[in-house]
Image (cartoon, rainbow, N blue to C red; front, side):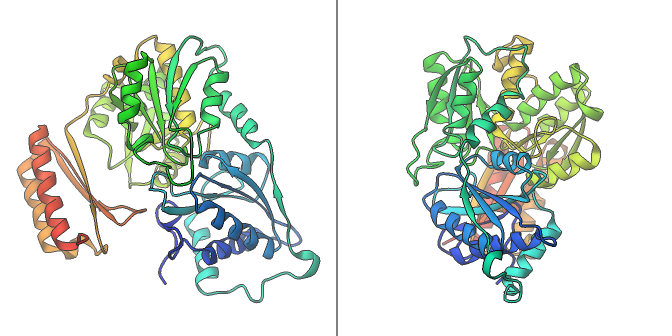
Length: 451
């Protein structure tokens, strides 16, 4: 058995290794042991998104925590960043989220936060892996009255909504603003509409009836087609799409056009800088960001730093370099003034606040960043060998890079959460970008693609 943790927790197809009850049970035990010191009884918050398999894994996690002498508090369906907030506000030892984020319903995952609201460090994940994979629990288990208890925690949605509302400036109002929300039949389906309604917006919600199997199904941040139509039909000022666990945001302007993570970073960075709140004038993003972000940063006087793909790497470098704003093109956006992790609802509130402050429609604000032609193709793969060991793939990449020269770039990498190879090309024209991207993707598919 190999590593359990990828770039964003443990993830895979539910009821297939590693997303099986036995591993979830071990995770519950390992987390509790990790935070058990002396006579302290660890407290672990457990939440989930709306996937059918969440029930199975929730029960296993709870059993693991209590069997190791911890107390588990079940909060039910709640966005991932909401669990981070509740764990911190309750002074718990850890918060665990059962979610596979934007993946289809048949997948699931486990994300872990410390009591400070930050995701676990690599060395802590390694301790958990070692305990589970080498079955080191036999001599650690408590007996008798030292076994833990489980509780159902009520009222957490209200606490989280108050927290969210407090990130929206009190002197601003959404009164009279028409907003369409797409909650992806996921974890944000209750808290997002209530938050915006309580702030005065006229809210219409789509994809708000989860049934265990429709999370992320042609909806949410990955599929904005219906949201784009609905915004135009209703004359809304903005559409806001979240993913299944509520930590991503993709927006839609009043003309029905997508506004993605890079553009939101520029808009919010511009407002923060104008207000003297963009610490070190620095924005952090990943190597997947569009070249237009770098150009916009130069235009508006931001410093720009790029990290590896993954919001955990964005956060690490934000903390290291002293930045309060960072994120990914795909919609993971971190506002460190407000939260310890990416939060789609907080990002949406900051974007709407920028619209109100500037008194401009979102289409005009989005135009602050020119988007360079970009094409991304995801290739399903049967294995993930080092790309450097695939001569035909490397030759296709080198050839595209040579022909693009200074007018574009190529990025080929494996997904950290799915069995995919992502081929991304930026170039001078849509036609050239499409051509080079397809050429490389075809070679990847021939070499390691799923038959």
